[in-house]
Length: 161
Image (cartoon, rainbow, N blue to C red):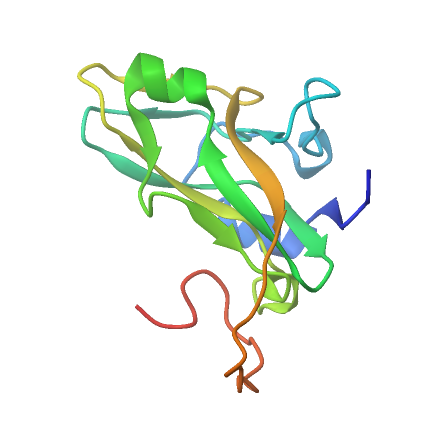
């Protein structure tokens, strides 16, 4: 298989900034690099680095402590793990997360943040180390009319509403 990306930890400074507000969390060096569970797995499992409980209907942004350096022409698509969707109704607040190849160059170091919603009827607790979402690398194309010349500067949600 073709290698199109690499995961790495964000800096200690960015970690300290983005993880304020979480009492229980893994240290930066304890955050596991996402891995596929089996040879046939498309998704790379992300571990939750914090302890968080979401009440029914509640949304919370979970910082992962990770970024991905992605080859041009590829995108990382973030989805919830199917077991959490089935058992708890967990979904992503933006329905699907798109991590562009130039996101690693953002001011926030390309820190992958995952906004999750508890769509179920009982509290959802994620503990440090629990696998909670997965990322899948996919190729993408562009239209003939392509004229984009802008370069990314901001992080999460920086290209507009």
